[in-house]
Length: 313
Ligand SMILES: *[C@@H]1O[C@H](CO)[C@@H](O)[C@H](O)[C@H]1NC(C)=O
Ligand SMILES: *[C@@H]1O[C@H](CO)[C@@H](O)[C@H](O)[C@H]1NC(C)=O
Ligand SMILES: *[C@@H]1O[C@H](CO)[C@@H](O)[C@H](O)[C@H]1NC(C)=O
Ligand SMILES: *[C@@H]1O[C@H](CO)[C@@H](O)[C@H](O)[C@H]1NC(C)=O
Ligand SMILES: *[C@@H]1O[C@H](CO)[C@@H](O)[C@H](O)[C@H]1NC(C)=O
Image (tube, rainbow, N blue to C red; front, side, top):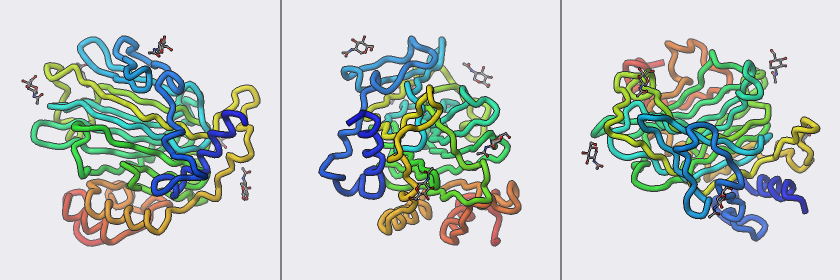
């Protein structure tokens, strides 16, 4: 059996059952790849340091450079995960990411699916942001931000993206925190072309922490992010034929959360969400088409940030 077919079968397993049971007798951890199997350094090579027999990598930002890595292959749909430990101490202006993107291949029509951590000042916590773009829809940001139920700089935690032709689900420690169902009226805004996976650390001083109020302070560096436990269960894109070759990669049957996941999603969101474009009516007077109004989320956001989310819809 080809490696591609195995990867695609693992993708089929990467649905609801992935996290709560085994799939076909296989433990999902079998689909992990080492850093050097799956990735190459992208920039700041001196600060991209594999460890743990190349299973893991640390990337850092210091006076000299920021750094990042990217996957060797591009993937059309899949489940992608890393286990990540963030830099400690004061990290204002430091952005740490794990994301899928194709801006190198499609500079004007890129697709992107992001996890981005936005740094913090003393006494505060890292905020997590998720976002996505499709076919160059960069003038329609779809950001959400969340507080987390743990300190992501204390230990490793799992961050996963499940992307099919009809859904994007973001997972933190296997809890779904955001679920986007494609609707036809999104048009090209739903990511549809093959993407690479990236991990990066960089200076986001002008926007990241407190909307740019708190800047990078290198005296707290070097800032080190550690990545491990890589899962690249996607359908590899064949550059010669410009197609995905495996019919088994058709995953349109994977489009819904289980009832248990739906419950977890709602519990997470009505407690930890701090920003969502779906409720920011100053920004989008008419919510973008995939938005589904949830009164618990809206009440939580209004309470958390009355300035942005007003009072009463
Ligand atoms: C890690 O990967 C590099 C590059 O592929 C290789 O040169 C090195 O021998 C590997 N180290 C281990 C311990 O596998
Ligand atoms: C993406 O945009 C290009 C150029 O505008 C267009 O030709 C193409 O059909 C679009 N693709 C999708 C999936 O909407
Ligand atoms: C970080 O970025 C900000 C804003 O772009 C810039 O003013 C600052 O010089 C940068 N800091 C370093 C150390 O590169
Ligand atoms: C945080 O950074 C400051 C300044 O570099 C240092 O003095 C302090 O020991 C650090 N605290 C921790 C917990 O690492
Ligand atoms: C995937 O399969 C579904 C039904 O199982 C079918 O309707 C759809 O056209 C297929 N998509 C592709 C790209 O083959």
